[in-house]
Image 1 (cartoon, rainbow, N blue to C red):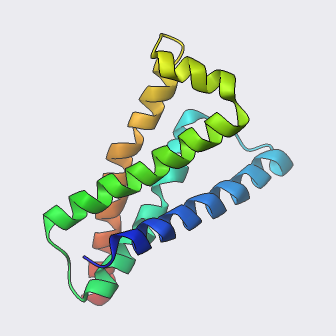
Image 2 (cartoon, helix red, strand yellow):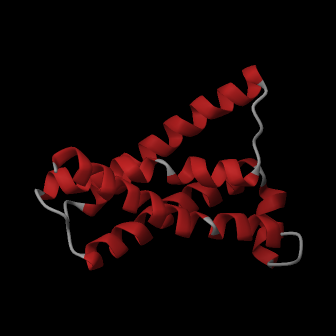
Length: 133
C-alpha cells in the first residue's frame, strides 16, 4: 500500500472540497442535507482514494492494507467531524460526549460511514480493474 498519510490527506482534501461545493449547492439550489446525504458525501471520495492507491502500488494491495486504509479514512472523517463540532457547536459536542438518547441518531448516522466507505473502496477497486483490464 502506498504511503497511508498521503492517501489520508488526499481524502481529507476531497472531503473538504466536496462538502464545500455541496453546501454551496444546498444554500443556492435548495438541495436537501440529511444524514444519508452526509454519509454518502463522506464516502464517495473513497473511490478516488482506492484508484490512487492501486495506481501508486502498481497492483491491488492485500486485504490487510485495505482494512488499514478503511479505518484510517474513517479516523480522518471522525476527527474532522468532531473538530468542527467542537469548534462551531460546543453545546452539541457536550451532548455527544454524554452518549445520551439525543446523540444516538447522530452516532448512528456516523457509524453508517464505515460500511459505505468499504463499499466505495470496493467500487474504486472494481472501476480500476475495469479500466485496466
